[in-house]
Length: 173
Image (cartoon, rainbow, N blue to C red):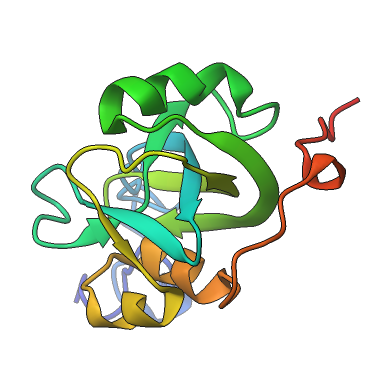
């Protein structure tokens, strides 16, 4: 009877033969367990261009093992200048980058975390270490996670023209 009449979402107290003996009278018992808080991670991605090619790196970690991604790092939030994080890209990927125009913001949810990404295009005069340089159409041949694939599809086929008019502008001021 409890499985058919006394349900947590829609108790049918008026149809229950034990209504006079019931101690809860449809007050939503059992109380549902609270959902766990899913952590939010902010990530900065700088997509390096060398001529007409972009750099991709093997994804780190077990979750996306065997896939390719663009260079990125965890940040406090996705607003603000990417410039303070350039040393991280130098240390992690061996890339000296000149930040170019904003490309996209991407939100993605995994079962255990939420991810907010801000991506910029950049110029890299050197190869870096451990990556591959491919043309944007060739990116379709590489396995990628959802976020990297979304960014790859947002890339122009030709590299952007970097000049002072495309320099990073702090949008928060």
